Image (cartoon, rainbow, N blue to C red):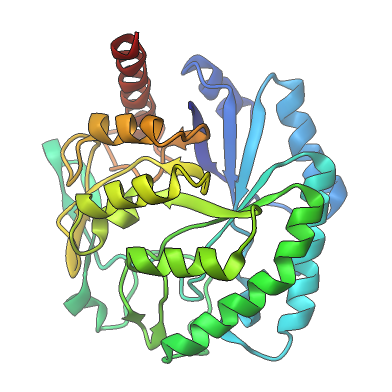
Length: 328
C-alpha cells in the first residue's frame, strides 16, 4: 500500500512540490484540464505522464473523463456508440502512455450536496439531506447532464452493461483497469434519474456483468460509509472485493451519519475507525494506493484545500507507519 496526492486537475510546479514536501511520490488527477470536446489526445496524455516522470512522480491514475464525453452512454441516448468509440480511444492512449487506471462513475447528474455545515472547530463541511434534495438544488457546481432523465433502474443497469461490453475489450488489450466509483450520495433515485451503485450487492452484480480482470473499484470509503448501515458497508466491501483483487485504489474519507442524511468530517470522527479499516485493507491483500478525497474547508485554506489535504495525508501516513510497526 502507498499514499497518493490527488483530486487535482492539473500538474503545476507548486502542486508537485507540495506532494514531495509531504513525502508523497504518487499522483492522481481528476478530470484533468486537457483540450478536447469529445476525447483526449495521445500527445496530451503523454505530456502529463512525462511531466510526472521528469519530476520523480508516478501518475497512478486518471479519475473521470468529463461527463459530456459519456453522458449519452449513461443515459442510453442516440450518439452513445460514438461516445463509446471515443472512450475506447482514450483507454488505448492511456495504455500506450503507461497510465494504468481510469476511474469512472455512472452518475449523469453527478455528486450532490444540499448544504454546508460547521464541523469541528468551525471547519466547513458539505452535507446531504434527501428531503432537501427534493428542491432540485445541488450545491456542487459541476458540468453534468440533468436535461435527460432515466427513472427506471433496470434501464440504467442495461446502459452500464452495454458500456462494459463495449469498453472492457479495449481495456484488456491496453492493460488499463477501469475503476468504478460508488454513487454519491448512495440513493436509488435522485433528480428523476435512477442510480445503481448505492448498495453493496449492486457492486457484486456489476463484477459479475464485467467478468474481467480489467474491471475493479475506486473504493470510496466515504460513499460506502454514507450508505445505510454505515461502517459495516466499508468492512464488507473490503472483505469481499479485497481478496478478489478488485480494489484498484481507495478514497480515504468519512462522514457522520448515513442516508438519508449525512455530513462530511475529518478523518477519525466519522462512522468508521480509520486504523481498523486500514488494517482490514492490508489483511485483504490490497496493494494499491490510498488518497485524500473530499476534505473540510479549514481556516485560511486554498480552494483546493492544501491545509486539509496535508492533514489527511499526514493522518494516513501515521496510520501506515503504526501498522508496519505492529506487523513486525
